[in-house]
Image (cartoon, rainbow, N blue to C red; front, side, top):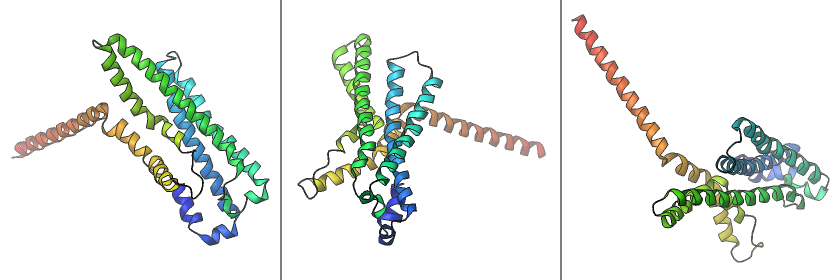
Length: 235
């Protein structure tokens, strides 16, 4: 959605000046997916927290709440934001590109979800540290090391690094350029970090991939033996 927004609106001066309904709708859709992205990260943290701390929660019941939080709640927030912002004429110019005080309708729930995810992370690490402390032969160093590694892995999954983004320097202030580069890298590389940590270097994924390769090789060997047998029979 960001690519579409920058390609069709920000990079097109005529569209911005005309300020048609379509570019305003595109802005609202972009805000919806932005809020949904943060709230689904909140759901990921909540799901892990429930799995480790509140063990007796059924996944089917939890998923219904996750769908409401991840898809329905952002739709309600975005609808309220669009209705309130549309009532201020000064905020409806230039395809709604300018900053508006009404954006706090979206920013506040996002910030609350990030701080809640931080609380989930702290509690999850506490639970992990407690369990590792009981089971480890050398509890303190090993447990602490594993808990810290678990915390670092969960940071991109929960999206907690986004807590730093709202604290933006003033325009043309010292550090504004560094903030822009930092926030762009942070937002853009989150999916890459999650995919590397939870997929590409995951032991379970490696085992499943190796098992699939072995099945393919075994199937190819069986087909080769069958073909050779059929050839001998024909001769």
